[in-house]
Amino acid sequence: MDGGTMSQEEINALLNNSGGADSGAGSASDVELLTDREKDSIGEISNISMGTAATTLFSLVNRKVDISTPVVGFATWSDICDSYERPCVFIRIAYTVGLDGSNILVLRENDVKIITDLMMGGDGTDLTGELGELHLSAISEAMNQMMGSAATSLSSMLNKVIDISPPTADLIDLQQTIDESSIDEFLGGTFVKISFRMEIGDLIDSEIMQLYPVSFAKEMCQSVTKNMEEDVKSTLGTKASEPASQPAAAAQPQPVPQPQAAPMMGQPMMGQPMMAPQMMGQPMMGMDMSQMYGQQVNVQPAQFQAFSGAMPAGYGPENIELIMDVPLEVTVELGRTSKSIKEILDFAPGTIIELNRIAGEPIDVLVNGKYVAKGEVVIIEESYGIRITEIIN
Image 1 (cartoon, rainbow, N blue to C red):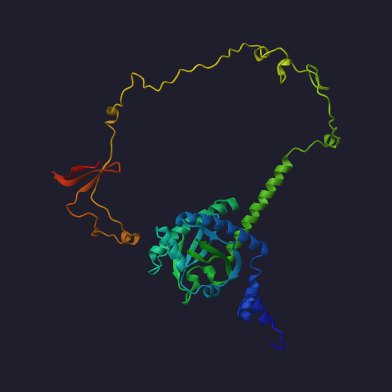
Image 2: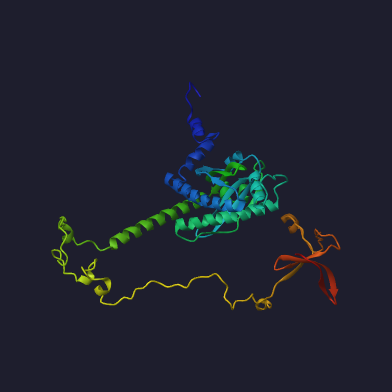
């Protein structure tokens, strides 16, 4: 810089938030990847889709979920690595029907732990341990439901069926050297980055990102534009198909209505046909309704029998014999225990599960799920049985 004058390369670096002339040139070409109108369309699509997804996430974690208005821009793999210091989770969503392409949702590691803990009934504070397969499976299922509902909103917007494949989640350490094409091919070049601010109660307040291939973003914009044009043509076609007013009649001036005195009973208004007395809104003087309509109407007050509250003489107690042959399900419960999902996934033939009941302790007898008795196990020939030892009152 000489005398306060900046070079063109330095100006490009500042305008494009890059560190060199090459990066600045690349960013300058990015401006032509999407027009401002296409950026607005992508932002509106993402806003509606993520709004629907936030509603679905609320039902999964039972916490208030707020997602801010999206910010649409461009990025490269190095930009993503600079934005996220800790390991993060990349969730790939592929479209199988209606759209041809995929996008990637990027979440922070701790955010995934909080969401999965809430989904499993926790309070969202258990962040101990490493992020494992259980967390990835849970967040994949959450994203499957979230993006599934977002695809439904997208279907309404594009007026065609949109469907996705089950999302896949991977833990990526951006501080290590990674071949970005191994995650998805479009990450090797410049792609569309949509940033959101996500808040879940007082547990999460961080940025999430949605990454789109430029070609996929253009396809969605074209679909939206095409759908809007078809709606406009349909609306114009409907108006054009409506019969036009007769020009001659339309050109004639309409007479201005003048106030007139109310006509006398039985006298028609000027230019109106005579109405019979039966068609008038009010009965004629000295005539009741039955005479007006030419038929006799028998009107009398309703008569009701007095209610004494006493039980009829022939009424007796319920006959329980009527339900004696109704089958009920009897269940004998030897014991219970609770296991985490991880422990259940480790079950294998030969696994021993310890129950919460001491050997020799009476077992429970339930009828249609209701606890009614206690008993002890006996053997009847080659079958197990239960001897009732106590009836629960």
